[in-house]
Amino acid sequence: MQAVDLRPLSVGEVLDVAIKIYWRNAATLLGLVVLVVAPVQLLVSLVYLSAVPDYEQGGFLGPAPGEPLDTDELWIQLSATAVGIVLTFLATTLATAACFKAVADAYVGEPSRWRTSLGFAARRIHSVLWVTVLGTVLTALGLLLLVIPAIWLWVSFAVAVPALLTEGVKGRRALGRSRRLVRGRWWPTFGILLLGTILAGIVSGVVGGLLGGLLLTDVGDGELGAVALDAAASTIATVLTTPFTAAFVAVVYFDLRVRKEGFDLQLLAERIGVAPRPGWERPPLPASPLAGPAAGGEQPPYWPPPPGWKPSGDRGEG
Image (cartoon, rainbow, N blue to C red; front, side, top):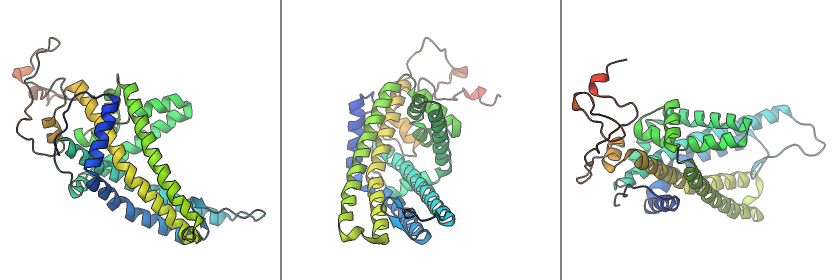
């Protein structure tokens, strides 16, 4: 696949590039998510079947009208649900991070390989989980105050995981890095995230509707059939939407860096562990009237300098 031309993109172009990357690398992206999500979804289904005797598609059965509530059974149901949520979250987070790596490879024209992408994400999964949880908690706190702060935080933290994977910033620094990148481009970023989320939601709804129609047949009858349908619907929807979500968020991240930092293919290749190709050399740094030469004549790798960059003589201070 030819490397993507790194230049500022409009909202429509961001989605167009994301869809093209998704389509051209569908085999790798879909197979990657299946490999991670399908076994976990099978395990979740076994937990539901073994923990709760009564299950319908979409959830657990409550007591019949007039029957007392069995608190022991309720706790079992809640525990099984919690286990399912945690396992699904872990699998989805790992799959999304691996898809970010595959999309970045496609950006520099490298073939996307599931093994390389999965290994890259697995080595950083603890950091990815922490950033994801921290961003989710802060957004939820914003929701307790008002809806508007929650939306603002959701958009501001949107590219925290790509920043972590590409730049190595972690925890609060990754969230702060995302917020700084989005600053000044909040509304276009919001528009892209909204459109992408709507498209992913439509796909999930269609999949759920098609499989839900099977309830009208014998396939969905009984406890085993209901669990199987839920597992199939969840797996297929996740497989189809996770790579697309990762693609358009990654494109947003690259676009923000191109606009604000002159991000180029050589730097991207170095950050994701890909050998730069001939012809990707960075152009000479533009002269800036706002900053004189660094100590000893040393210059940053690009302008504006990356976060935390200092001349070598100053790096040992503080």
